[in-house]
Image (cartoon, rainbow, N blue to C red; front, top):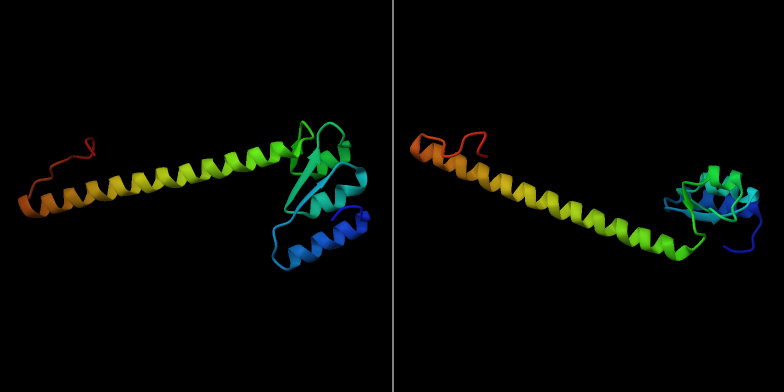
Length: 118
């Protein structure tokens, strides 16, 4: 919501959060500090932003370029997806090894792999 008063920004952030929305606010001035603090994610400008805005925000955009935010969000989503894939792979391998050990132990009476080998 551009070109609005600081009080209007703060009221909008509070109303959206009360309805369960995740709210991000960008700002660079002292008057933006209350909305930056109230938002779930506060983004302030690193070069042109005031110290009050920087202290009230969660993320400081060092180069004052919004394209950096898009790149960081994209990178974070890829990292999150890779972590999910890694956990899925590890669970699959561990469950398969467990099943093989249990079936072999029940059928032959000996465990084919000891704890160090697994």
